[in-house]
Amino acid sequence: MTYSIDAEDLLERFCRYVRLDTRSDPHSDTCPSTPGQWDLLRLLESELQEIGAAEVRLTPEGYVLATLPATSPNAGAPRIAWLAHVDTATELPGGAKPIVHRKYDGKPIELPDDPTQQLTVETTPQLRGKTGDDIITASGTTLLGADDKAGVAVVMSAVRYLRQHPEIPHGVIRVCFNPDEEIARGMTKLKLDELAADVGYTLDGEDLGEIDYETFSADAAVLEIRGVSIHPGWAKGVMVNALRLAGSFLSALPAEISPERTAGREGFIHPVEVDGNADHCTVRLILRDFELAGLAAKRAAVEQVVSGLRIIEPRAVFALTFSEQYRNMRYWLEKDMRPVELAREAVRRAGVTPLSTAIRGGTDGSNLTARGLPCPNIFCGMREAHSQREWVSLQDMKKSAETLLHLAELWLEKAAP
Image (cartoon, rainbow, N blue to C red; front, side, top):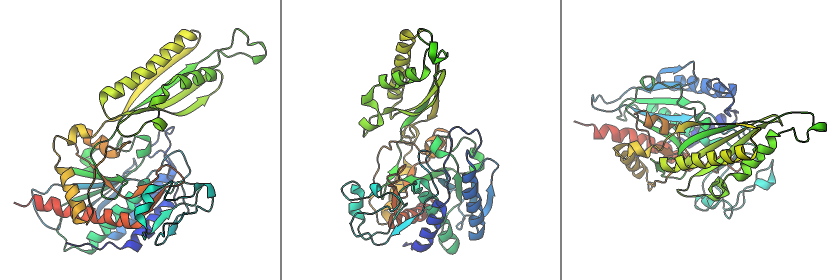
């Protein structure tokens, strides 16, 4: 079957969503962690109701849930879920001014609010294959927010299409839009019985045709340093400056396993924030590796640096803690690859060649898969995520939505008695 997604409606939705600033905040204890996320969640709740989805509700914790009832009764058909997160990365402002570069001609793309952020085929090789596509960017000073509002728009377009075409056979489809993925808390407050699905797919991938079933395993680390404070005028022999110790800690971390020096299947240790003063300082880090043994080795490397500092400066107090964030979904999905294989077949039916890579990051599917709901990741076309240069191809988003429609069809086919 051939599907024809309304590209202009998809574009309008995407641009509407990215104009909202939905950055998450790791320092917040609320869920969602920021008020801006509520704005988009309420908008999506309203739009799902207008489209005609069933059982639409926004939970007190900030999860929009909805149902597309089955159009073809089959008791054996699994309930599939489509998921996308509404928050954007913490490093840069949201609230994009989206710019649509129609029929990209291969020339440099100017971002008018910051000319230094120009996109060219030399600096952005993925643009080489996008000549003729409609490319959407921000204006140069904010994130675009395609991570993951491209995924949100794709899901909404696929839902709209199925509501407009009740003749298309499919089983029960559950929809979930969630907060706080960027701070590794996207699924913290979602109960699996609330989602009520047998298999899920996050729309949070990049390359056209990409189906991901392997992610980093991830830990967070926090180092609290307590120095000795005194007036700097008579500090000799007394003061222990926590900020200087934080600097010593950072400089002693193995540079060869930093994000800027690793690629492919190599993991890293990444300081993400330093906060404090001479008396007390906090350093936050993330640790990443594809294998649990590698992740343990990175914990040990951080511990070794801290142990050395304790010897160098015994008057200071160092408190180092680690916390689990997510685990490589491959550990579970490789036991049953049907969700991945059906996604690949859906990509083929959409006229695209499927590909799979090990994601140098994580998805909400990492958490869900570990909890018992297999949840691979599907492309939605985002590029240069977490930067002012972020962009997305409208044509890639359209193919992503078509993939979802074929996927719904395939799960029903495979369940046929």
